[in-house]
Image (cartoon, rainbow, N blue to C red; front, side):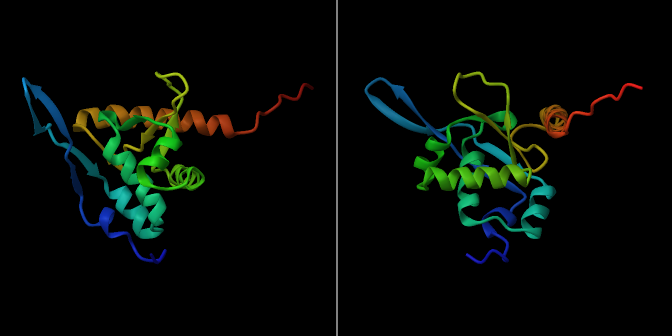
Length: 163
C-alpha cells in the first residue's frame, strides 16, 4: 500500500457499525443471536489525521483491533502479544504500530490498571468514540486531564535558584 494514499476503510465513513454476536444457551439448542450493535463514531479529527499522513497497513490492522474490541468509553485491557496473535503480526510489529498510533494521538495507555499486568489502552475520544454524546464529553475531560499529566511528566524539572 502506498503511504501517500488515504486508507479507504477508515476515511470513507463517519459512522462505523461493529456488530458483535453472542451465543445464548437455550436448553439443548445453542442459538447465535446478534447482540446490540456497537457504534463507533469516527470524528472529523481522525479523518484529518489520516488525510494528512495516512497510516500504514499494519497500523490500520492494530487500530481496527482496538476499535472492534474496545468497550464503551474506549478502553481495552489487552497485551501486545494478544493483539499480535489476533491480527497475524509479529509482536515487534505491533509494538511499533502501537508506538506510532500513540505518537499520532489515536491511542494512549492509561495508568488505571484494573487487571494486574494488563495495560489499559484507551482509543482517543477526540478521534473515535463508542457511546453517547454525554459519555463522550466526560471521556474528553478525562482525556485532556491525562494528556496534561503526561505532558507535565515529560517536562524537565525546574530547580529553584536561591539568591
